[in-house]
Each structure stands twice: as structure tokens, then as C-alpha cells.
Length: 478
Ligand code: GLU
Image (cartoon, rainbow, N blue to C red; front, side, top):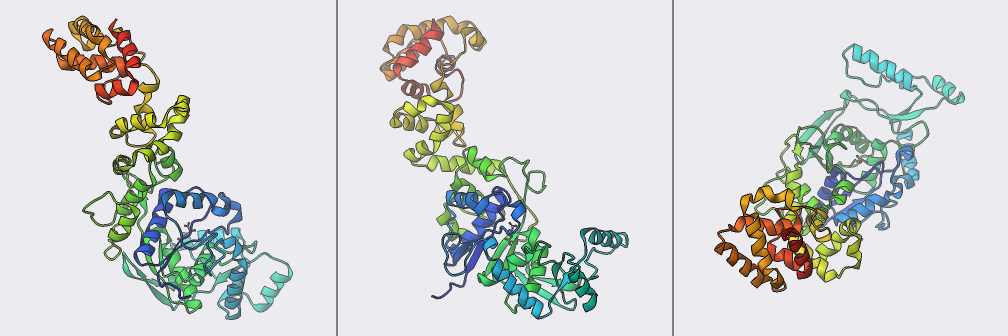
């Protein structure tokens, strides 16, 4: 089997639920792989057992399916580079560590947390960048043997060659140069023998033959260290794109406190996966003639060859809402019904007993007014709940005209089963009595739905049925 040359991966740590930063990383890796007829891989980085929250990355996998970002290779889809859970790849990391030990590229470090902290503070006081002071690199063989004899816990550190510098290729920044003398000998293992993110992540990228690594720019300095690992294994580096971090409207890194940071929140608020992917793919990257784009269309139009290195990408909820509204309008009527059902049944248990065609009809009538699926609940409130407004609440809207409006509505109310002619007749007699159309319609709206905004009067009567409309109008008119 030949290995396609473009291989990207989404490598989340299951330490929390998916947020927009993760989704964007997954999406960008997916789009690039598809654009280059490559392979999009999912790898679950679960080496930190204590912080694992989403066991087996189950939620992550469900989220990716929901978003339509289907991976080609990963858990349950082993194409020869598995397992795809880092927790199952320990033998590989041990094997690679053994190579580094044999080649004298790593050393044991027995320093305690307190000692490391003291050394850090000393360096800060001396205005030096904090760097591991290499106490343990200087240990004699005897001293090291004595520590081992005493069973002092230790970790393995990478021995960086200060004379080396590396250039990495970043799609937005071009060639980025790092000098190893500016970095610390970094840990490859922890005292409990588990491996660090830096080590496992680089070994996996190497052995999974990842050609492109697209991740947040907070990983840029990690890349410098990982380049040292690639060098140690004489493996060519992938191409990178360190993506700008998503920021809120104040320019601060997007966080839990910002609405829509968590994918679950967006889903619960009735955002569609199409809109979320569409939004995340078009922000901060070029101009698009047409902005409503499906995943397939995004694969063809998103460009990776002229990415600007602009500092931040603003998360603009209003733009996302606009796109969501557009995607809702595009939904096939039955799909809109299916997707809205969970929201509607939770709010109005009666929906479960209703005819599907009726629900579809209701949703089609209000869909231009809603931005998210959850908005359908409010938009249909009037249908499930007769208005509680009384005449007293609304008289100030009509001045002295109210009695005349009431009279002209009551005059024709019996013909409401024929909506068109009912409305014609009421309008005509309002005109004769010198009543404006505006107050007349206001009156009918208040009677039917208790508020001003919403579907047309004609639609309202059809939605509610003539019988129910009759009751509501009569209640307010009498
Ligand atoms: N597990 C890392 C994270 O979630 C992966 C970073 C990377 O893509 O290399 O931040």
C-alpha cells in the first residue's frame, strides 16, 4: 500500500470538552487533507491519566461526527499507524527512549520540584531567562548510581546541543529559526514513567508520517523543542501552520467565559454544524466571493498558500449568528423539523402528539425570524400559549379608535373560516369607518399572539386554525 504524502492530524487531549479552538484545528486539518487528497487522522493524546475527562475521547469522536469532520484514520479505523490512543502507545515511546539513551542524547534528572523552582527564581532575580541549569547533566556516573541505588525518583531530559539551530517552515511565517541555546533541556518522561506531551506528540507525528501540523500558535516554542527530537531521529520536519489564537471582542484569548466558546453551548443554543464549520473556515483567512459555503465547497475555496501571519482572529458571534440564520433558511423543511424537535418537545410537550406536517408548516412560517434552532421555541410561543394580554394592557396603542376597531372585527368574525375574505371584509369596513390599517393589524396581532413581531395575520390565522383564532380575537374584541 502506498502512503499518500499529505497526512494531517487532529490531536486533542481529552482533558475537557471541545471548544472552538479545537474545532478550528480539526477543521483546518480536515480541509487541507481533503484539498490534497490526503489523509485526515484523529489521535487522542491521553497520556495524562489524571487529567483525562472524556474517556476514550468518546465525546470528541461524537463531536467530529456531528460536525461532519470524519477522520480517515484513527480510533476504530486503523490503517497501519495505530493504535491512535497515546495511552496504548507506551511500548513505542519506551523503544524510542531506549534509542535516545543508547545514543547518549538524554540524561536522568533527579531534581525535585522545589529545587527546580528555587533555580528558576534565582535566574529570574538575575534577569536571565529561566532555563534548566543542568545540575543533573553534570552528575558523575557514581553520583548517578548512588541516586538510583537510593531509588530517588527521576525523569529523562533531552540533552540539547546548544550549538544547533533549526529552521521550521510555517505556512504563515515562512522560515522560522530557533537557536537551541535559548531553550531548556526538556523532560521526556515524568516521575511516574509516563511520557510528556512534547515527546509523545513528536514521536507520533514522526511515526504516523504526518506531513503537515496545523495547531495553535501557543505551540510555537514546543515546535522548536520537537525539532530537536526530529533531528535526533534524523527525520525530516513536517510543514507547520501555527494558527492565530481566537480572541473575544476585547482582543483577549477566547475562554470559557465567552459565549459560544464551548461546542456544547453552541449546539444547545441551536447552532448548526454547517454554520460553525463555515464560520471557522472563513474567519481570518482571505476573502470569499460567496460566504455561505458547505464543507465540500470550503475544501475547494479555502486557500493555504497565502495565509497572513496576522496576530489574532476575532470571534464574532454576530457573524456566526448571521451564518446560522442563512443555514437554517437553506435547510430542507423536514430536516428543519427534525432538528428543531428536541428544542420544541422540551418546551412544549404537546408537540410529541402533533402531526409532523403541522409542525413543519409552523416552522416554515417562522423560519425567516429565527437565528438558531432554539429561537423556534420563542417564535412559536404564541401557538402553544394563548396571549394573556387584556384590553387594559393595550388600550394606549389605539387612542379613541379601540371601540370602532372592535366593532368592525366583530362584524365579520363569523366568516373567519375563509381567511382571505374575512380579512378583506374587515379591512373594507375599517376603511369606511376611517380606521387606519396599522391600528387594525395591531389589534389582530395582539389578539392572536400578544405581540407585534411575527408572521403575517393571514399566516397566524392559518397556523392557529380558524377556530382558535376566532376564540382569541373574540376574547379581546368583546
Ligand atoms: N494535545 C495537544 C493539544 O490539544 C495537541 C497539540 C498539537 O496539535 O500538536 O493542544
